[in-house]
Image (cartoon, rainbow over all chains, first blue to last red; front, side, top):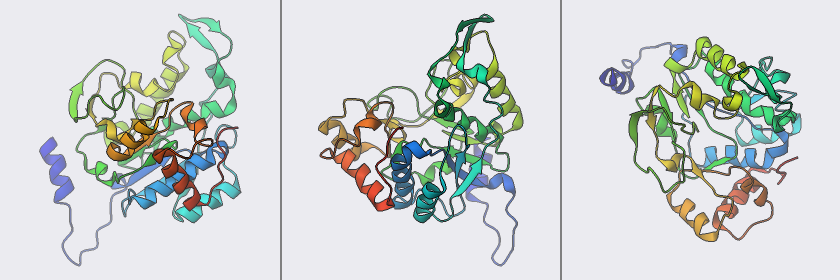
Length: 189
Length: 110
């Protein structure tokens, strides 16, 4: 399987002069979520993508939004468009974010009426789940908008794995890439 | 997190939402939900340089180390609220350089 994946990566160039329609499933996207209250971080994040050439030529930059849980004003959208004019804003159907999410249950019993996620903008963290249904893309790189990219990571799209994550722990640990089949909790970032 | 075709489907989305709404062990209903959903899946572990978490006590040494070694730094948790108050640290200076180049206000938090 690995061989076929590598083969599809490196031997996919069309013959000169041939017009080939790229299948939707080959599309790539970098997806994140920027909200008004963190526009400073979000703008620095997008700027860092540009300055490091992290966005490949054929790749969308998509920012998930929701008027209730992840608001982004017109003014702030303008700021972001001025950094990267091709940025796309995608309004997410957040009907899956029910009020029940602010409660905590144990074996079917309500044990906590409210958690801090009762603050509407806290629920923005769940917008990430929308990437799972972005089925018109074949590769999606999710980056949190409180990150900044210091060196290009554009090459990450060539990684021949279906699921790539950074394990939990401080930076000093696990500096080498490994493949694993594990049951513990890793940080999917 | 990089996901490819195998993990991009309405089926995976539905499974994630089912997990989000289940009421037997809701400790997984936070940001670790995807950890739980894919706990038994094969995955490639990327080096920490791809998600260099900046600790709350962001010292000059930590900032210099991150600038030297990291590809992506992550201002997790409360450290992001310190950014507005700091400027001497090289990593924080880089953040402000990017933010100013973007023409964005410093607003961080509500």
